[in-house]
Length: 448
Ligand code: HSE
Image (cartoon, rainbow, N blue to C red; front, side, top):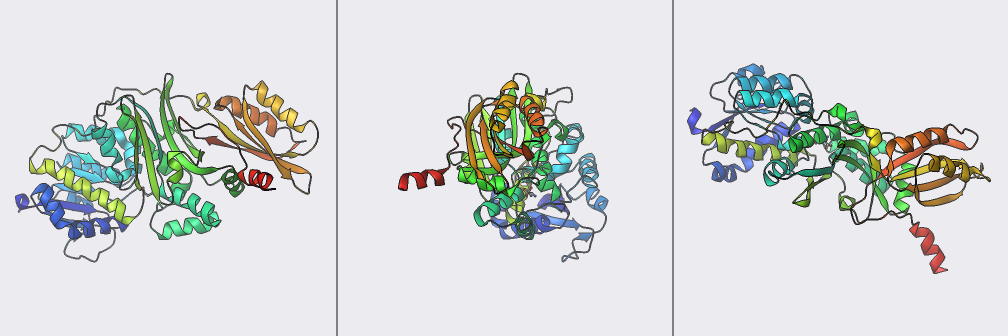
């Protein structure tokens, strides 16, 4: 029986699990052409009984220990029992496919050490960027590249929320609700909106790119939960979109790692990435920029990526070579140097809410100058009835620690400042320049 099929044990029968069963059923012929052996789901484990009672098993260890099963698909999500399922499966001589970014980012060392020790494969394409073949692109397509930079919109839920807010002016809560209904969001959506999900994915891509283990704790993380709709609208007026970007950049002093809302102007490759779509730009020393784009969340894209992994891994099962050469070369001894977040350099958008009276602007500019923050552009946006005004500044590239020092001093000047200054990183593409042009204002001026 074992050799007639590739026998799969599925653990976790939620939205993606059901999608995997459907995809394998619908695309049977395509799969058969690729590996010349039929794939059958032999058992499915879930907490509750499922709509396929003949395949149902209650205890995941019954799947892990089943000698007929070649490959285990872990779709439980979260840390435990997912970690145990993966490690015990490898110990039991099974290959693993997982879509679980949280467990991979947290236990990268344990999982890939076990895979190497037991000579088995762990495939995880669906864990980053949904259907986008970015894991394969990075590990195989760019196998011998010196990776200089990875930047990406890596979370479909937040990109969907930001797109809805900008396009339709809907509230943050309403946009999140639609993302949940569409099946994009995590079981706990705070992982999406607080940037943790993006950080997990960035940690995976960075660990893969630089051959060690980059931990989520190495990444400076800021989500979109505190983003003010006012800044989304103001920056729109200046021709920018807000995107949650995960970024890993090789510098001479270490890898600069961050997840934060960023402004991209209309010419940026990420500006056209809307709704649940993701995009990842990988820059290699010889390759230059390589852009990956596609649906980053949702049942069909995620299950399509899981099934691709099942098929690609099965090629090695068919030839009895799975795990002889590891798919992730994890070097326990390799320590990757991480750049302290204060040493990170970027241009920033700043919004000050200040009293509109003499000497206020000069005070702000004096503090910025003293802290070595250079100004690229500046605009004042009218005066409100209570005598306060908004001043928008774009800085030149500045060290984060210098900017934070300046803003601390400015925010402490209570006599002129109404509310805490907002800062958002500006994400530049190499040929972009910093602009602050209020297009509506220009239109009114020139049509008079
Ligand atoms: N919650 C994730 C997202 C699902 O929104 O991108 C895919 O990892």
